Length: 388
Image (cartoon, rainbow, N blue to C red; front, top):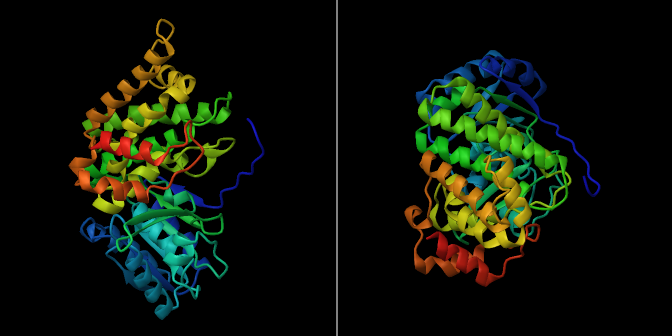
């Protein structure tokens, strides 16, 4: 393990089929008014909404509804949520849904007591909160983002064609998160597999950086193998509880900052995918899937030893009789075959991207420096064209 780092995670997790009952333990810690954040209304159809509201009311809470959080929550929606929180003097933001609801709740939490426009402060200037933060709790219904145990909050601005994530500090992390794998079983298949790839790519973004013999990489390889195994079982039987519980648990550990310790980390697949998502409004996991292989093939020559290790340790490919280039490519072929088995979207054109969007997407792509190659704008354009 190279370098110096700290690790802390302040989020308390309740996991399992009976986990919702522990909401009763948490609610007395917070104010009377609870802003109940959710998406398009599926939780009302499947009964989760009623179960949560019943617990809230049994604990003497006033429920303030804030529904309609979209898969890519917008700056306008964020401003609406801040208005709701201010008008109702809420003491807890309770997100019931997937990562978008959790992200949105965190963005609202740092904005309620802030006098400035939240987009300008947190997403244009990347400033940190200097105001009182409203506590957040999460009840997860979709596995993928890991937002239930980190400080990340991704917001989309349609006016500027930008989709930007701000990773806030431990003070913004959810105070508690409730993870019941049964809640994820009502998802359509395409949402399930998009979440699965989001998990896998979170691990890859941290794994494909550095060349040292890092304990964190062994953790990452184990998580990747678990995701691969559980995903294949889940697409065969979406109600396989063991598979869905492993996916949910892996999602949390993929992005709760553990795998980034001692690592530079990359995150260029996310920068490319988020820029494309701002133009297409496509599902996050699918945008990542569409750009991943062109990106990894582009940087592979600069990180051959890690890509060769990926082939051997994650996919079980015998690499001793292959050149480094052949071994590395064999790992990416195995990854591609798995992605196709899941039914992931493999190109941006299927998500609505067109040739005339390329320059705009390239301009919106934030270039980071932690991976094996620092991209130029020409590199970004080439990768995006290969992704169409």
